[in-house]
Length: 404
Image (cartoon, rainbow, N blue to C red):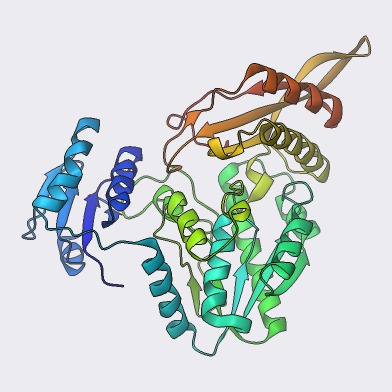
C-alpha cells in the first residue's frame, strides 16, 4: 500500500499523540526507534521526519524536532508546507487495500483466526473473511479467563451475525494447570501466549493444513512490547509473549499499524454494528492480567462477578461511550471487614475507569461518587469473598491501564 510516509523517531506517549495527530490529518506515519539504521529508514522513502531527540539523520528530507507539547501544533503545517503531504491516508481506502492484499497473500490456503470477541479480533476476522470467505475458521479458545457469560455471547455473534466457520475450544483446565502457582505478570503473559498458539496448532491440524493464523494485534501492542532498542513496557501476549517457533506459514495481523480509534473506524467502514465496534476492550490474556497473585477458578469467578457488576453500573449510568476502558481488578490484598456483626477477612477489588484517545496515555475518569457507592455495595454483597472496594485514580503514566 503506497502512501506518503512520515517517520517519527522516538517512543512514548508524547510521540504516540503526535502520530495520532498526523494520521487524523489524513497523513500516514509510523513510529521508529531513534536507533533505526539510516539505510533502513531511507528504504522506506519518508517525505518528512519528526524527531524527538538524538541527531538528525541526513536522508535528504525535511525534519522537525518535537521538543514539547507546544511543538505538536507546528507538526501539521510543517508536513503540509515543507514536506508536501497531501493527506492520502483514508480508512475506507485502507480497508479495501488491506482486503485486496490479504486476498492475494492467502490465495487458496486455509486460515484460522484467534477470536476473543473484542473489537480488535472482531475487525480482523471480518476483514479476513471478506478476503478469504469460507477458507477462514474462527476459533474461540475458552481459557477460563473471559468475562462473565462472554464465551456464549461471542459464539452467538459469530454464528448469527457474521455466518463464519466457528469452533469453540474448552481449554480451561489446560490454562489453569499451566498457570497454577504463577504470580509474575510477565510469566503469566508468556504462558498464556504460548498456550494459545499450541491450542491453535492442534485445532488447525484437525481442520487440515492451515497456512495462516490471524491475530488482532494493534499498533500500541507493538510499541509497548518494545521495538529495536526501545524499552519494553510489557510484552503483549500476541507480540512479546509468542513462542519463537509456531506451526504456521505466517501470522496475519491486518491491524498491526492501527491505533485503537482507527480500528474502530475500520470496523465502521466494514459495516460492523456500532455495538460491537465500541465494545469494551479486553486484553488477550483476559482476566489473567486482572488477577494479582495466583490464578484459580474460584478467584476468576469472584472477579467475573465484580467486573460484571461494575460494567452494569457504568452502562446503566449512560457513561459507557464516554470512557476509554472500565473494569475490575482482583488484588492480592486481604483486609478485615464486618458482615452481620462478625469479623471478616476478605479480598479487595479495585475498580478502574480511564479516559483516553490512544491507549498510550490515559487519565483516571472522575466517576460520580454515587455510582461508585452503588458498585461497591453490590460487589461486596454479591461477589464471593470480597469485603472491600477501592477506586484507582492513577493516570498513564505513571501507571498502565491494566494492572499487570
